[in-house]
Image 1 (cartoon, rainbow, N blue to C red):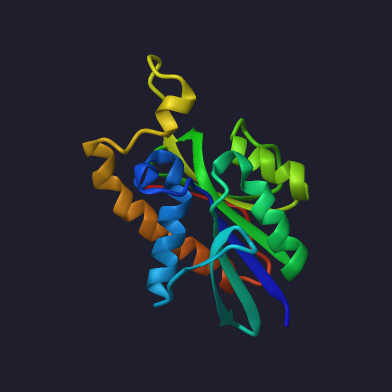
Image 2: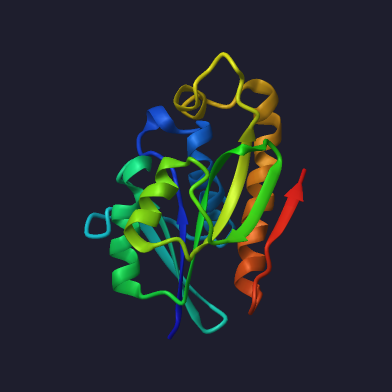
Length: 185
């Protein structure tokens, strides 16, 4: 049975919950909840993981627990074991405005250290579901900005973004040949 690997990026630990850098975790959590599944910690894969069968494919959903900048370590272990026909990685993107969701294949890291580490470990040929968190205020450096929790105005938008992100995962799985797309909320 062919497999598809879906990775949500973020940092483990309560102190990082609901931060901009954990947007990937938030969207994959929404999808897993929609599918009435739950994650279990798997030390071998250094990830929280769950699986489902969908259209005669095994779908592996994972949240690396290696911290963002070392995400590629867990992703490589998962890719080496499951040998997926495709991989979708979900993460925050500082270069896109909040409310923009973009699905694209391959490319560079865009300065995202988690994606940079994945590219270092498995190459750049994987799908990306990028969740806009910008614009970054001039007074903050990128590291401080991504590790902050969403502000009150942003919190009003995040439920709709996570819902739409979950729907984009479902659409991705339903399409035999996914196409790049951008959604602006």
